[in-house]
Image (spheres, rainbow, N blue to C red):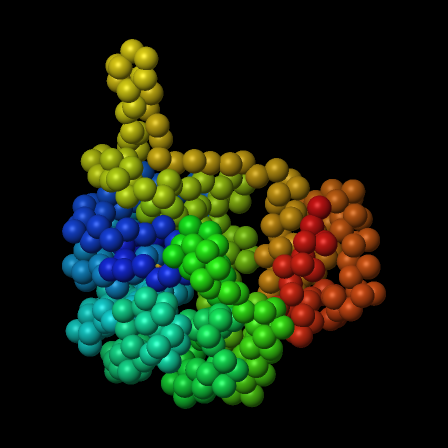
Length: 399
Ligand code: SF4
């Protein structure tokens, strides 16, 4: 199992809370598609070297639904050729994130034709005043229309995103949002507490005291409502923020939590080959310079020597980090315990040192006594009622 992630770095406008890398330079989408094909050529041996087949593809961003179907088709063809994929639709899962405002029936049909099998729709709320506050482009009726259009186009695997835990969202409104979401019967629902990121408009409002964070108590209550309502409606929680109808877990995202290798393409995208993590700089300008020549080589940014004024140093757009054993250990714990079914601590012993494992087991025993972990067969997991507090629990477990 291995996956490809494409980061499409364009948005028509920025949501107040978002800190993903993105630019409004939508006039450069076709140059980006060329550069993406260039990067695919550079990375063509990634999976061959690992000896693993590509099984999932995820096109995220940014707002990938701003990408014309023609450009997407060229990129998919390049992926198919360079990574020896039989056909895009033969992959286990091909997800594309869409903004409700962009999709038309014909665009959705084109996505189906291209092999996209799963849609992830950024609905966020069914209350128009909240969508305006978030600076989203769509309103609630457009979200419902887009959802129904995706169904009409034949998508039988749709995920929607919802946000809770922000000042201004009452419990009644959250219940209403959940009822509307359940009413659509998507196969998957991802729901996130709004987080205040420093370099966003919301972050600046928070610093100035214009925006106040919702109390943990209310956020926790909204998270519990989310869990209860979705469980009653037949959704299973399989990760902190992820709920699905039986058998509809997101395969691509699950591979991140299982730490299988993935290749990230596009500015700011991260890759992991099992040992090393590497990532492209979050800069469209540098990305175009590095890959647009499409000659199978990665080009650097040539910088002038400040004192001599002569061209010299080549600055690469790719950064990398070799993970130490301890990093692998901690990541395994962090990612496994995000999953509702937890992890088997005995499996760590096959990979990690006696010293690391026994230290971890001591912390596990303490957390079991406190009730922050429970034993379920041979697995440990965070009880459902404490998943909202998982960051703190996991922090006490890692080395
Ligand atoms: S949330 Fe999505 S649409 Fe909004 S700014 Fe971020 S990437 Fe763009």
